[in-house]
Length: 279
Ligand code: BJW
Ligand code: ZN
Image 1 (cartoon, rainbow, N blue to C red):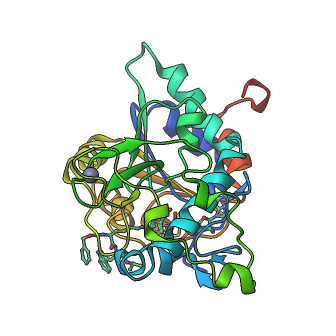
Image 2: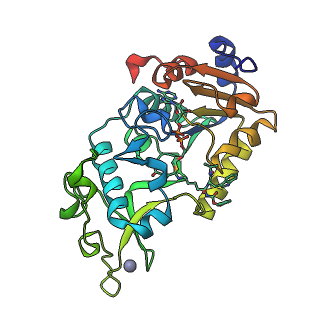
């Protein structure tokens, strides 16, 4: 721990921030933690008896689409009851403040919860997909879908592990299916699972934003999932300031720059000089 600067100087950072024109915020599950959305690798990283990350794989979906749909539908229903917090709102506020100026803030998020959009951010690149989009496994048509429940069979999905939920197998025909009349195949969440490639256009856009930025804020991510884990070292290698906002330092703080320890709903507005009463 000694190689990490524990908590950085807000005043010095603010000066650098005021002089930055192209700012990218790379966000992860921690940015939504204060809304009550569980992170992947922290407390609540389990759903029923399963490690959440073990359900986010094409293998899990192929083996048991009913189980994986129950996991995603539970998360859709949970997120629908949550509101953006001060970290989401601070980023949206800064984006609005920059409108009409030569400064720009863009968000590159690993989160699928869409809370940045709901906070009003427009420059949002969701590199792992979106909870409220679904995709056909056959014709690959992507559909926006906020139906709650998504299908009657997935109403009131319980996160609790008990005899009933353990054995709850929803028939394939009762899971979401493609609306294209000639197709009607099984649909899946439009999410990037482990061992799946990110959309090349989305990756290209992330690369462009990262190569043009003159400041990177790394907020609430464990920085262990690739390709997002290489974004901070990539930007730091150009000598650009990287500032991490997290409860604990990650590999992103080992690069250069700043580390702000604590809940980002508090540290972010303070570091960016945003009056919380305006959010
Ligand atoms: C707070 C806070 C508060 C809490 N305030 N902070 C190179 C090397 C090794 C492996 C690979 C590699 N390249 C690719 C791989 C394989 C794999 C990978 O990275 N594996 C690693 C585990 C090693 N990557 C992939 O498969 C990716 N595909 C790919 O690269 O394709 C090409 C390829 C494939 C295979 C080999 C080589 C190349 C796809 C990754 C897709 C990730 N998908 C998931 C699930 C889907 C989304 C969903 O359902 O929601 O995305 S996994 C899960 O992890 C989710 C997250 O977006 C992602 C990142 O997690 P995140 O956001 O960082 O959350 P946590 O929980 O880990 O951390 C929370 C943090 O917040 C903590 O630090 C807390 O301290 C902090 N915190 N409260 C501030 N209040
Ligand atoms: Zn289809």
